[in-house]
Length: 154
Image (tube, rainbow, N blue to C red; front, side, top):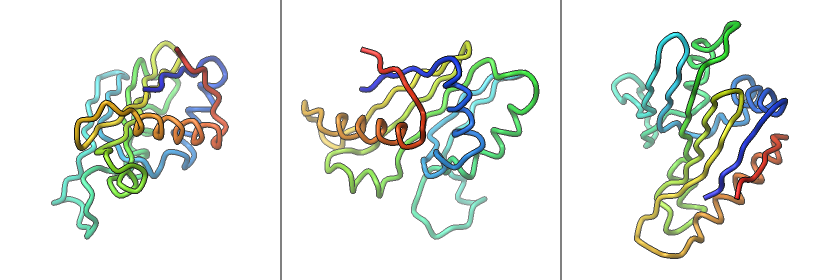
């Protein structure tokens, strides 16, 4: 598991990438907890009755949900807290690793700083951490490519 933090001016850059640019748009949303004037709990499961698609996916993409989240948090007062659990879509996960069932990126914002963690879920039990290492490298490259500077925690 990779644990990293984003602080100071880097938080503003990260939020720009998250909320105004398309850097995270292809990732799926498993769930979001958000605190502003009230607390929101959002599950990323697609309501198949609402969204008429032929696609075989279970979770909404960040691109589809982002406008609603931006609308909730826009204004002069920063959110008190948010946590977003992103994941790769199943097709990409299967292409990246044989034994990975899911690959997650957890982002938590609180007290003007961001903590990120990565994790994987395996199809079959294994002591091998290959999937974790591959996912960590993918996330590190993704953050670097998008100009997001992080501090890796030990």
